[in-house]
Length: 537
Image (cartoon, rainbow, N blue to C red; front, side, top):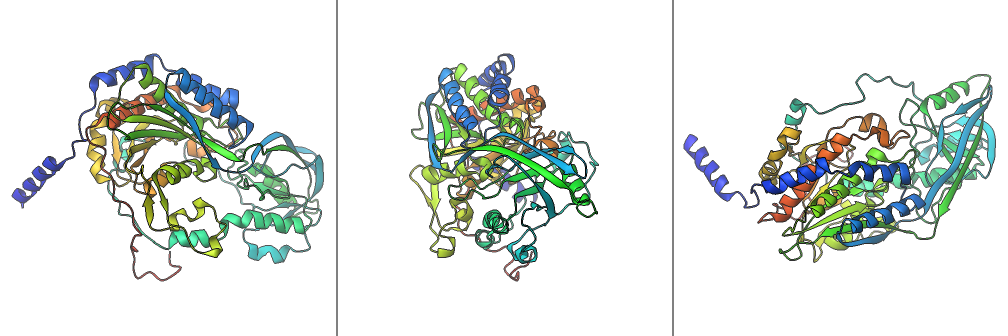
């Protein structure tokens, strides 16, 4: 057994792909010098946040960001700077808003309009009804009870107090626990069930019901305590704008109203929401810039982050941080005058917050598409709603040109490693490429898959897409999508480190003799549990 194991290990070493070559140490020193001694990452982040602010897709602020980022890429000397449009819908922005309780006592409330809902056309006033409606089947129990009322649609809870610190960095022990391979659990029908569930249309159905019943406005409770607000909403498509204005209240303010609604002094509210819709151009635009390759004709590596954000604050950690790091890596490499074998492309995605729409559009246009669904029930469903349910995958002419994509979208924490998305063959390559950065905390190569951001649709068609591991800091605990996501919470030392690591990984991937190992073109998987009964979890 020992001899067999030794022979197997020797064969594995001999078979290791040529891509697992050491990074260019001289270039790394240049990247470190440029990234730590001449960094502009915080100036970039400050312009995106303090100067431009929250960048809702197709809003005037996002149009400013689209133009300004292109201007910076050109200023730094990058090539092929351009945008690519995809159909999105209406732009929307907040002019001003307020909320106050007038009875049983006057008090100002913390509130924000829900994205893509109309304004109140002045101040509206009314009593409240707490009607926690979560499914269309509950409409009947509220018929005839909502006319002239402000409807509170979230079921109030009792609140919570934090039991762990909000700010966190990964420990070595926690990172070590990410390196084990985890088998995928396949449910081939799950994507089809999700596409047919109707969940995506519930907001429109609820709005239509409440408007028909004569309600004045919709109010929901913030998903976080501590006075935090979000204001997220998804009715951005042309022709799907709600009829009723919508507001989100801070959780503590909402619960107070809900308690009072059960007493003999139910509350009366005044709401004011002044918003603007922007319909000049229904297309959203991804931003691209290149450092051209000198050989390996047509092949490229790419790094991306989403430029759009929500507007409760300035979208700093989500995701001006990632966008600034992408731009800084471009500036570093261009200032060094690198001449990579493969083109290095930098992408700033749009519409990520509404469902990874910009990166999906890129995949669909340049890399691979999926067979259409000949099902009238899903004829009007969006591309993103049905994407995972459609087989087979159909590669486009440029499918193999993209040899690696790297994504950054986990806040402003330093890079601690990379998720290789189950690509076991790529793990040794990344271990070598990250080895020079072990002293900076970036050494973990995780075999886990990660989701929720712009590498996902690349993974679904077999293109090597990777998400970096970052220290969480207070991203999930209190900043993600919230009203305090401002420049103040960015960590300069972390962002400088992230830009240095990213620039080095990109250069290694661009100059590697062989591209990173790819996974096979995905086909419809078989069920992990072939004997599961329908509806079983």
